[in-house]
Image (cartoon, rainbow, N blue to C red; front, side, top):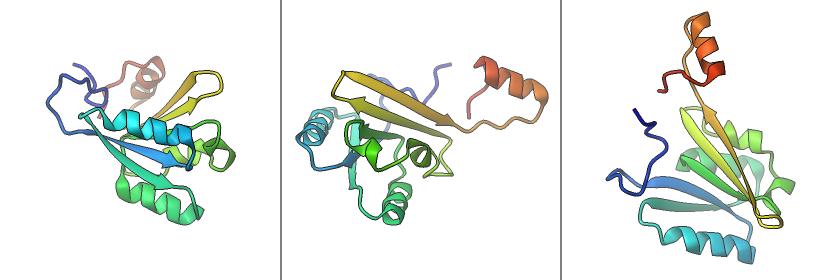
Length: 131
């Protein structure tokens, strides 16, 4: 059974909520414009200002994917903090686009209940049941 988090364009589900951290650069605006063309994505934007207010806004918007400009955003924010910004999310993907070398880094947080030692082993092997 495919993981419901990895949606495809053909599925008739609600739009995937993508949060773009806006830094005001031309690259950020281009990403925003490109992604808005896809009808299966709900694009949300937030500017990084006060750190406390920023994380509150991320939690309020509760995206499934957070998109960062690796050239700018990583100088001011720690991606581990973003992965933990929405404590109730069972799945959260962080996508860091690095325009300088055309590399995209993808980090994902999955919350899995492990009741037995065999559950831990299944998680390590990657064949656990997903929530």
